[in-house]
Every structure is written in structure tokens, then in C-alpha cells.
Image 1: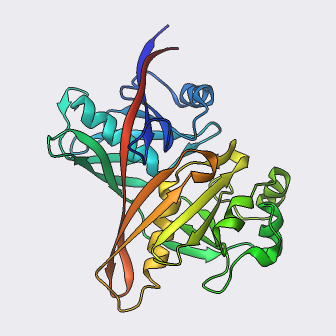
Image 2: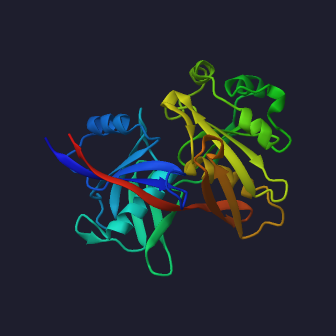
Image 3: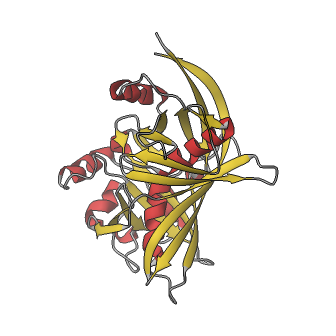
Length: 306
């Protein structure tokens, strides 16, 4: 039997027991993909990361990301949390960890900047999404409404119809009219399964990201995410979906600013409030890059026996 140290974090929060939990195994050498998947099922967090030596020594590490049911090419909170964990450790595979990290992932290279306080202690990280925004037609409201426990008329379509948005991982994104409607949404797993069966492959998971705009500030949002087919009834914070939505909404901002800043609060309804900051760099009215920024706090340390 072999033993592997792990640390758990809460991501997109400054308070323990809020935000999105993440487990990080900072030295996963000796684990194969099948065992990583089994470990992910055991933790049963929305994601867990396994850190391996990079193929290219100019990069910091290879990072593999698993949900309880599958491996992902990219995700937001696992990257933010993994960077924070490595920065707190101060080294990875014998090399010091600075403020700029590069993670090799299935979606490409993820560039990371460690966020620190005035004393120099790591407080979180910001990551750049590895791919450009893609937009595709989503499901009709008559299909989506029952999937999330809402009448089709409760889905707002004045700004956009439901869309598949992605910066490496696709999400079905829809706007709702108010917080009351957002609070009543709930997934129907059987209808998710039926809808996914009629879609072209979307990396094996149909995930729905719902949001509401603030009346005072249209770039301040509240969101919920459901992925019941991936054993995630609801996710407290979804950085990859937030990044895709931010990139899309930035294209709708008038006067074509060079940078668009947004915030998304998520997980409120499930008692795990998360705060995600996003920064979209624009070029000729199109998103050139999007960064996901968040705080982290360490929760537990332990040893896993395999």
C-alpha cells in the first residue's frame, strides 16, 4: 500500500465551510487514472485535483481534474485552489513556487497568478481560461424549463435565449428574471438524461448554469449550477461557467471598454456562499482573455492510503 498526502480547501471564499470544497493531492506520482477516479468518488467533492510533474520543465506541473464520475479538461475552482495549495507549500517536486504558475491540462496550458496579502501570504489565485469563448444554440425554453423545475415562461429571453457557452468546458446558460425564481429552481435528473440523449456529445455532461442580473449593477450577478448527471445536484461555485458567461456578457457592454469586470455570487441558496471575480480583456469588441479570481482558505490535511 502507498500513502498520499492531501489538503482540502474552500475556494471562492475567505470563510471556512463556505465556497466550493476542493481536495488537492500535491504529489500524485504512482496513481493511474482509474485510481484517481476511485479517489474522486471517495471524496465525493465536485472536483479533486492530482498534481504530477510537467512534461515540459518550463511549466509548473501537470494537473488532472476529476469529478465523482469523470475527468475534466479544465475547471475553474480546482485551478484556483491548486495554485493556492502549492503556493502555501512553497514548492512542488523540489522546485520553488513563485507567483506565476503554468499548469498543463487536457484543455491546454492554464496560466495562474498567486494572489497575496500585504505580508506576502497566499490568499488565493487568478487563472486565465485556456480557450477562447465559443457560443452555440441551447435548448428551447419548453425543454429547459421542466428540467429545472420552472415554467418555460419563467426563463428570461429578452437579452438572450438559452445558450451553450464554453471557454474549455460547455455549460447550458440561461437568465432568470429575479432571485425568487432562481431560488425555486431545482433539477429533474430524468429530464436531464432525456435532454442529454438528444444532444451531440458535450464532454459527457449536461450542466445548467442559471443567473440573475442585479438591478443596480448589471455586471453583478447571482447564479446557481446543476449537474445531476455528474452526481452534482448543485455546485457552490463554478469558475469555468462563470468565465464563459463573463466573456459572453462582456461583448454586450456598450462603448467597448478595454476591460470588463464582473462578479458572480453563487452557492447562497445551499448555504455555501461563494464570490467569484472575473476580468475580461477586450479587443475590437471581442473577448481576448478572461481571468477568474478568487480567495481560498485551508480546511483539512490528511493522508490517503491506496
